[in-house]
Image 1 (cartoon, rainbow, N blue to C red):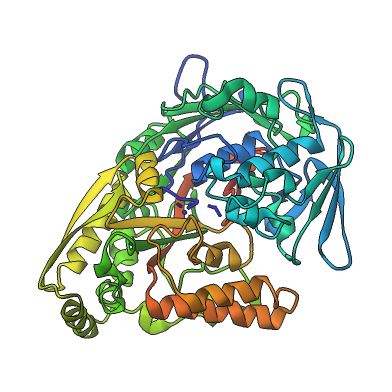
Image 2 (tube, rainbow, N blue to C red):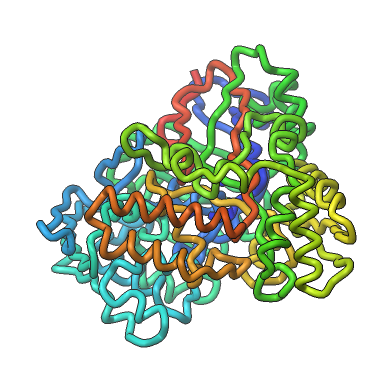
Length: 541
């Protein structure tokens, strides 16, 4: 998503504080194993449960637990049947036919092919303003519909009876099978949307579910919620936990204290905490496909449209210092906009193939040269801008570090503005920022999961960077070269290098999760990409 984002920007919190605990009868201490209830800690709340409108990883992960699409991603990026029990792709790759199983919504009504047709039409409709509408572009008429040039009824998806769904693409898309496993391709009940109206997806009671769990206890603004077994799910035997209770906790020290006092069975560590527990047998370092970067508002501020200014900002930041001495959690300096692990060819990871080393290596002398040139070109002697960040501990420390690094540029005055995650998402989407610390977690194992975000028309291009060559390369990779792996790869590598050389965004680091998990908690499934967590097999031994 996913903008951890800010597919899935998914917009993310700077660090997802995770905690597992088992609840006792009326206590907050670890429970008896047979109760199989866990407590899980998040750093940020759910933003929205509206499938067509959600944008962040917390919401995306929750939707993946409570709902289900045609296919489901499991360990090793393998796909297994979800609502679709089988599917067929035509020889030309343009027609996908899904045969659906008989399954139910949590209210007992059947899940049908019409639910998918309705959901997809709703997402691409301009009035919905869904930020993931662009992911439907390969489906016939989707682009025209989203631009208001055609009716949603013309979308290339049709229900043949109740249990057959046919999708018509305008061009082959090798990763379409991964897209239909993502939350923004999930079905929606037209009856539920109509019933709840504008409040649909704003609380646990204003939603129905077709996945392994149901959401309870979320009123739309609170910091606690639960996942409980969905008795109507088609495969209830695959769901082991009785309940997962979530609690938002933004302070790493408080979270660690709860772990130490046996009120939590798992906690994500931050900064020096990682060094403190480096030799603990329960420490797990999980590499994430989440990239953190600076977006500069190039639509609002002409100053940031100057490439020399953007280069000066990038070369002023010591990424190794940031990851090794500020974050200290296993995060690593970015090689580019695409995370390591999202695609390889002939044994070479895309991030390595497309790296422009000079664009991600600090060089103060060169930064000053670019800065002075940019100031002359823009007619400024000094400027003052604000950096928008989340209100988490890690975000604040990262913001302070960046502020300090940029202060080395003469006349550059940077202040930081922290706010709750949901507010930061809204302001980013609305372009209400000078600079913003953003993130994106890949949805599927292909570089396009990230590269597509930086096209001129992408709703996730919050800074509104525009580069005609970049747009052309992405169009080629998705169009005329889509069925030629070598050419498509070359297009994507060239696009990444174009983004790096032009500093469309200032990439910072690839995130990691340093997590303590007690040995009696089993079955945790972590995904570097979205949906990040799968709760179905979690047990307490």
